[in-house]
Amino acid sequence: MTLDLNANLYAALRAAFPADLDGIAVETDEGLFYTWRDLERASAMMAHLFAALGVPPGARILAQVDKSVEAMMLYLAALRGGYVFVPLNNAYQRAELEYFIADAEPAVVVCTRANAGWIEPMVGAVSASTGWPAPHLFTLDADRSGSLLEQAAQCSDEHAVVMRTADDWASIIYTSGTTGRSKGAMLTHGNLLDNARVLKDYWGWRSPEQGGDVLIHALPIFHVHGLFVAIHGALLNGSKMIWLARFDPRTVIARMPEATVFMGVPTLYVRMLAESTLERAATGTMRLFISGSAPLLLETFETWRERTGHTILERYGMSETIMLSSNPYDRAQGERRGGTVGFALPGVQLRVRDKQGRDCAVGEIGDIQVCGPSVFAGYWRMPEKTREAFTADGYFKTGDVGQIDALGYLTIVGRSKDLIISGGLNVYPAEVEGDINALDGVAESAVVGVPHADFGEVGVAIVVAQRGVALDGEAILSTLRQRLAHFKVPKRCFIVTELPRNTMGKVQKALLREQHKDLFWSL
Ligand code: AMP
Image (cartoon, rainbow, N blue to C red; front, top):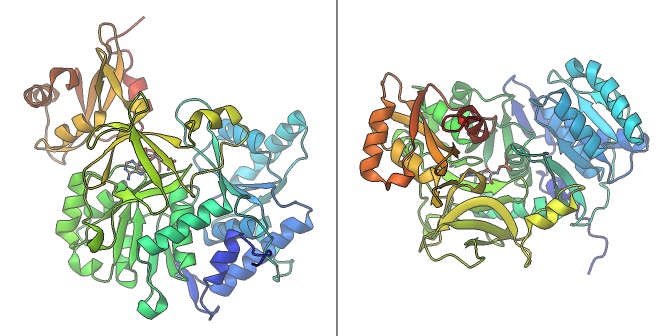
């Protein structure tokens, strides 16, 4: 039994690099090439820089930067140095950043040059008011400039990966909470590595002897999908990434002949389907298309199959748990079923419970609860919220509502907070949206609950028409009345040109509720 086994995630990723470190690890949309040695050296130099400044392992490194390979190297440096990486969405503005900096108490802050002018004094003011040492501030830009790289260039490129146990924190991911304060989900080296290993196996990542894999990376890297699932997937398999600073449907399609794996949120698939260049010939070398982070419409799933011959594999996960369930890769385990998120991944215990805490019967809708090696260590400095998030027997309450069919396929019906309770009866928005989406001329829809004097809450439908189609909201509602119990039928229907979405493709239902909150209720 070796006692000195280092559970640092970087050690496992590094061990998977190909023997030839001069091979290409990352190729960018700007035509730049990075070798495996570049990843190893740059991360070593940055880790040295932080250590030389006296930043102790366990300290937080907070980054709000544009997507770049150097930003990924910063993440790898944080891992290998034993720091806790805190990536932030670039969309966050001053007041939000102030909250994150005060909450995370980082020892290092990395931002873009454009933001440094206001972030530096703000960081100083926050640390002065809270009494902790002011963090070191560095800049890093997508054009590969900035003080971080300049200073790291002075440091040694020999670095011994810092010892970590599987329970040490590797990252804090702030949830995109729409209500209340955003919570920092603490993920350990063990959480991340276990999930990456399970996915490597489950999604059949190919070894070099089997022809290898090449991933098109087109997702943001401040979120679990792009930062963990995509990057760990490629690195743990020693696979090259084609790295796009931002998603562009034409570029992705044009690069597909050099690639085998693509990961996207549903909106990316919708946008690629709008391109005439998306056809079978373009996707011929591709092995796997994965979708997640938001529900993939059945229509997108089916149209993609018709146009490309590929069946998108939909999976489900969240910041607090990383990946939980997936449609099968291996056909022998079952077909990939559109509208479902597949089976619980190996090692994940997933159950659906009713309000009384009993297991739901097959097909019955209830709260999704999970337990397993990828479930997070709790919310950063929020012991009360952490306690509330778990059941007495240690399952994490995901906040998602769903059902499991007789074969074990899980279907997500929505977030529990999006559930509509109308006249005391539960209305599941996803069911009503499914019926609306099936109507001729409808591209997509969202159903949200708004306050109502008699019923407590009623549904309001917001519908997007297919291009060139004129829809009538009243006609939609009268058709629905023939198909659904009346309490499920929305009371109003608005036709809009698009649904509000965040960068991960999630429909912003809180925003829609806010917009329509006074329809039946005004004080
Ligand atoms: P985040 O923590 O930002 O990754 O958001 C996680 C949430 O996204 C989950 O709790 C689900 O509500 C939703 N989600 C993720 N994947 C899927 C999916 N394949 N289908 C439906 N919802 C999903």
